[in-house]
Image (cartoon, rainbow, N blue to C red; front, side, top):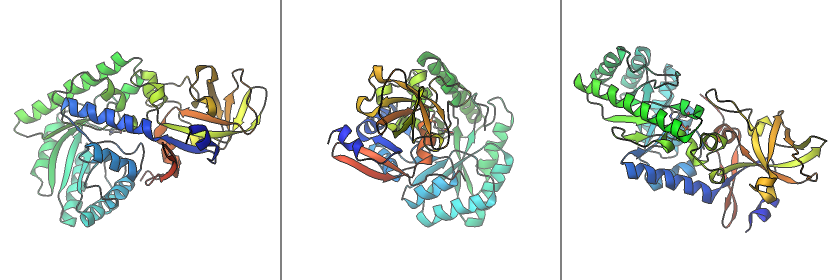
Length: 378
Ligand SMILES: Cc1ncc(COP(=O)(O)O)c(C=O)c1O
């Protein structure tokens, strides 16, 4: 079925997934991991879909990464056997929810931490549940969000605390170079990745020379991983965004616009002198114009007439959004009310999170896949 015919049947606003492009992105990342001898443990916060997670596992992933206990629960109950929670878990009720789900399914759970409080909470709750939990120490390689600075003298002490606890296992060190999104070129992103690699190897070596084995060195952010030239010393990568891509990695120069697999389909519901007004506003496209401090220059997305998708003379910017309306600057085009517009979002991860289902464009026609872990940041 051709794409125009498929799109005519779709009620808008809709989040479209081009299955062929998505599978191309999944295979390319798995090939990259295989080539460099590192495990690929994809971050599923991007897609929150059991079906896509299963495809990633089918290509060779040994497990997945999640941000929240909500996501962990959905994927544990979905049969995923090894899960890393890459945001510190502190409160006892959250630990109880995570450990109960993991116990019921026999899941290997690994969680990041960067504090004594976090380690104590993990140890207490793991002991209460009669389970053993793997912990990673999060290292701050420049994003300055969670993590211990590489020179922090507490690293050895905290790793030792984990190592010595009867219900905890020291899995290693983990970092996220999200500041790679601020890079202005592929070369700059490669520099961020190499700085991260050197930092992580130095932290690993310091721990090992103190007699603490570091089984895993885990890194991961799509632009850094795609730009990286060396992976020596790294055991695992955890990119998430690569499954769909969006304007952010395209802007950094590590992905092509034509590889973006997630788009939003909208209908022109009104028009005025300046704008085509569509039914995809911030509740569909989100209000994201960049991440980690980068500023946007493509508004809330790059739009095209749906029937001339990605033809350069059809490019329009989604200039403004209110909740249920998107204002697409006309750029000299003349689209009738009722026309369909297809938007490449600035940031696909929150777009997926707001959706309840994907309309998947397959060679055999459209399919609907649920966003199984949509919403919820608990
Ligand atoms: C800890 C951690 N690891 C990995 C990722 C994946 O990064 P990306 O989606 O840029 O590939 C994220 C994303 O926010 C993250 O927070």
